[in-house]
Length: 154
Image 1 (cartoon, rainbow, N blue to C red):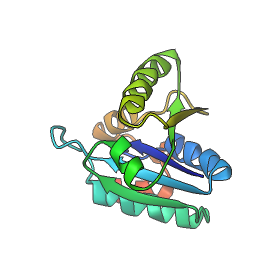
Image 2: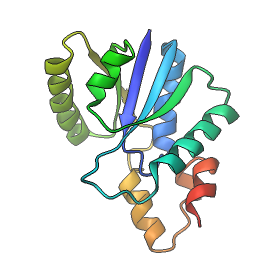
Image 3: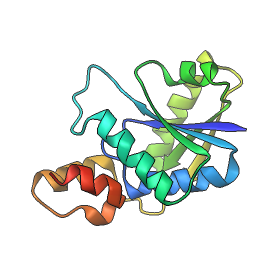
Image 4: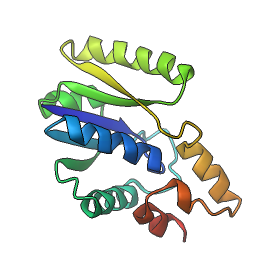
């Protein structure tokens, strides 16, 4: 069984990494897809995040996980790679409501796709929180994998 965990991952946090760990125990193959939206400006280059995520996966020997950068509709990526499960992390009920809408749209594009939710271990951690703190010169190393910190601290 294959699953996709997609997001902007701008930047990839320990919360994201926890979801990947959980998914890697349940699925034979987990595709971590950095979804690029050309209308949005990234704080950290997608290629830089992909390198950092790959390094974190390698350090933890999560060999059934792979990282891709994709600029299309993620459900189409899933169709191309024969993936039937969409992984999402939930921090709170607001996330759930948002993610249910996304799951319903994905079902329109790929009716056989199922969405699997994992509870976040640290609901306060988000990419936007990390970016905000980092923009004010705060040390965010506790909120991101070491490999991500190495790339964003400059």
